[in-house]
Length: 304
Length: 280
Picture 1 (cartoon, rainbow over the protein chains, first blue to last red):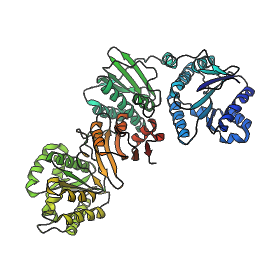
Picture 2 (tube, helix red, strand yellow):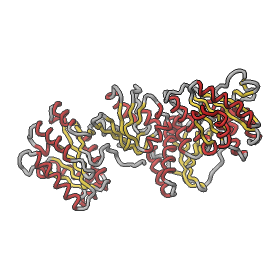
Picture 3 (tube, rainbow over the protein chains, first blue to last red):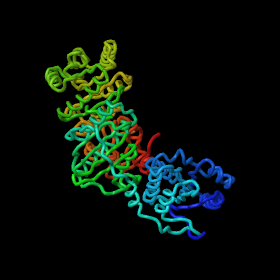
Picture 4 (cartoon, chains in turn yellow, blue):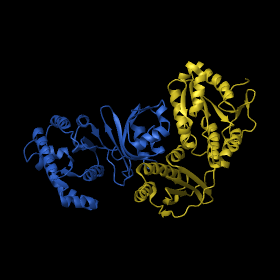
């Protein structure tokens, strides 16, 4: 094997024998270096890898991929928190072998390719080695193609730079759907100040029977968007709220120059690196966050 | 969750105090205290000197519809401190404590959830010796701690020696002197100094609109590690949380936190930040 795996690597395979042959030395090396070592696989492959590792396998933490990968925002936050804790507890490095959940639709595939693209900037500052297994037997072509675009290093007679790798921000941009119009929202007068608007939002959610926990999270998200609007966006131009199907939507517009960063709000905040954390909180606290920049300003739509 | 009422960082069961220099500060803090007491369903008693009773009634009636109706129903009473406490006699700590106890029993018997009392101590104590005052405050602190009682003692700074003021303040676990209680001009965020251990308690909305006063306070008063209690913070945002790190990025201990604050601590990565200690 030439070279060594870098931050975020792709291992494409098609049978269990190849999986075991690659993963066992990779994980063993991490254990020998006293790194924190984690596998994120389905139960069958978890057992397969554990068997092959033998006794030392007890020091490998395992996560069930099907329970773990609910949506990219949560997986990123969960991973980041786990990595930070391992490092705080003294691990010199965190080594992960993981596989994406099985993607059955094009939408699923795009969602998890977007996640793979985000992993690059999200973990660039952490001492981690992530190898993503891609089982050609189970994932659709869309995931296979997307995986080649999102991993800077891959295994091909040794670890080497992957020529198919694309700029993560551009990949995220291409995979982010353009926000569709929603109708039926009610306009709230914008001259109330942030606190007044939060009170309005709160009472509208109470009237609309939004469950308490979801309402709390929506308030936290809207609070961050309002703070951004007043501090960077020249103030609030308008707010619209209301139910859309099963969801509650709050849309906030400002007078600002807009935001042309497809990664905005996706990257975990880093201590001492200010800026952008409000959008991260807003993305974490909602089920979906959409942004639309026009010449009139930025509109952010939050889904509870 | 967000409310529009002014915050005060005093909890049921506490014996708090504040020192004031200007009448506006005093009114603002006392009014916030009384409104919180009324919201708790307490009988609220405002004690002042006999010559101030009428002016205070007038001011409170004009202040808020809630206050006016509370005066009518008897939920709020403005009383001459001397009459209630001393009945014209000289200072006697035990008699005063007995009077407060009786007042508490009466409030509960009349169906109130508790008793909130605030007043200028000097007006009640007349010419008592400073030492006796300090002793009285210490006794109060020992005697009262039931969640159905809240006491807020007011001290006019012009009427005491500095040393006496410090001793009196130390006899209270909770202090809300300006600029603590008046951190934020809108009243959305208020603070208290709680001790021991020395802790800054915040109550209300800790957000980008309200942090200017907090930042000034931290710059002027905190020159080492900071310990905060954020259990009464109803709403917080990233800008508010970051203000707690101050311009000096001092070591921060979060002794207690509300649910919204806990969520932010995790999302900001403070749970593994070496500069932040979060109590479980």
